[in-house]
Length: 478
Image (cartoon, rainbow, N blue to C red; front, side):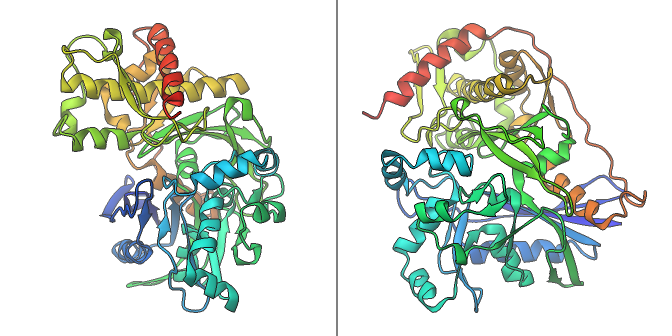
């Protein structure tokens, strides 16, 4: 049996092939353009991404099924009849709706979104973006009058465009701030708050099932799994029991912890209840989510400033930690997510001196991201005790210095996956699960393996100093 998983991420689209005979392998990857029309705006061209998905599907060859994961909160508008986009994709990082979010907070609506969706008011989620499209996009307004408007996250657009199936999976819907987290249905009150016509939204379905078939050079191939990228990685890690957690360090960093059949609402800790996955014919599995807006994006930013040339240069550093010398970096380049949820917070270095060199500035960035991850894990541990092992993946999990520093801050063993494409691996497993042949022994993917970093130093003092820096960051914009 041969499964293809298409990982449609923030910066690229790639396809992984998994079979019973070989290790999972990415066979094709295409980057897409990042558009920045205004300060704080981030967009993608939906036509470019559709083209890239089709390219990945064609390269996959003859497979039994596709699984596809998506960016999560990124969303757009398109026409029901022509299936052509009416807007660019507004990416999850985009904060154009900040003023609207602040107004809704002032009007007291955050209590409602926390109660029903389990989510705070934040530009991160899809709802305010979709409302912005309705208010500002004339093509969308015209399509709404004609009854032809469709709104949704990117997965719904991909599926509608390529399989003529206008649906979204429940994990993705749970990231919009328009879905009732308990019922798994769109909520009329939430749609009214954000001025999103409920009739324009896709049907919510489980994460596995019959999503239709995609036309490829090798014929029609069924899609049997669709899910948010972070939840796909959680499944790929094999996290199934209460309290098992992982952190993915991509453009941002995202921690997820399994809570089973229980919905944990922990607004004081800044953690978000979400759907981990829902298999066809089964009840949803819930999780707690803790996001960090900026992770490898900060590393790429440092590289663009000329602080280093190649990633291999920042795998180790001579001497002690940057934070030991008093140098702290706050990675709030797009604000602070969990547990603060403050878009006004600002990134900064604190404790700079003439002695500090470019490599120490980058070292401080790595440490700052580790400190932020430790904040999220600390909040999760207050909800339910975590084990002594934290699983991680993503680009930064390949950096030995970062992994060791993270273990020291957490005072837990950190295990990076040796399988670099855990997100795609997870969606491949889900796609195979639906076909059932995996349970019959015909498909047995090799399990993900891990290296290990155990605590060597205690970073409690510098972690406390980092928390003081957070106060400055949050109060910088008066």
